[in-house]
Image 1 (cartoon, rainbow, N blue to C red):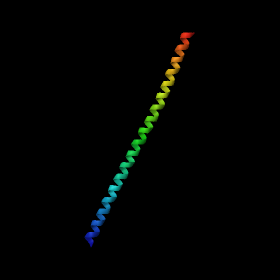
Image 2 (cartoon, one colour; image 1 turned 60 degrees about the vertical axis):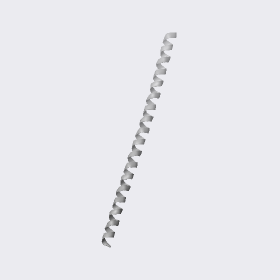
Image 3 (tube, rainbow, N blue to C red; image 1 turned 45 degrees about the vertical axis):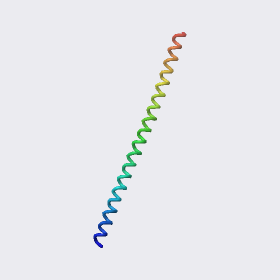
Image 4 (spheres, rainbow, N blue to C red; image 1 turned 30 degrees about the vertical axis):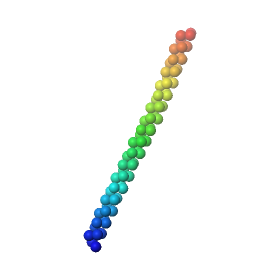
Length: 67
């Protein structure tokens, strides 16, 4: 009887470790996912900013040529 309880206890312990490991891994995957999303957003923001800057410079060049 005692042996059986020990086996069950070990089994539960292992199951709990597995569950914690899986949760930790999922947490890490989410973190990575959100950092990638954040970087993409930042990159697109800077790309837009760069496009606007280039457009303004182009327009100024055109205006200088016309004047």
